[in-house]
Image 1 (tube, rainbow, N blue to C red):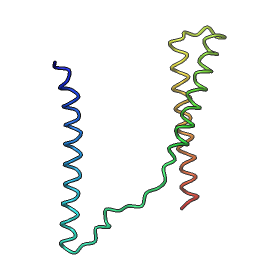
Image 2: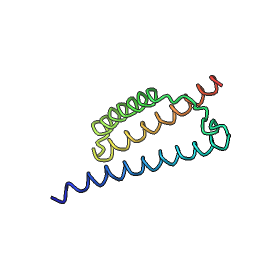
Image 3: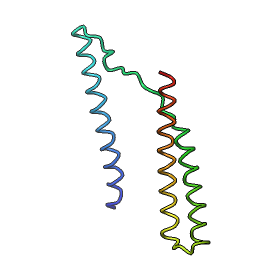
Image 4: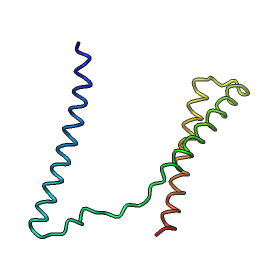
Length: 111
């Protein structure tokens, strides 16, 4: 019986925070319009986010980490609990750093 209250409370919390955020933003913009100030100050130029590239490199990093973790386990008799997580985290981290530098280069090229 008590288990049903947790999802209801989470939904209510998320809904409440979203409602307060959106209604406050709306009131703020209406106040700016009433004073004759342009509401474009809230509009910022967004740089493109290359999410598919990040996900692709993340997947490649995880796959390479799994392969090298298996190689460490088989050929170097390393413990499975150490070989797999260490290699996965290492190559996922390398792939995220690589995606950062690629995205930085692409943003510089577009500017």
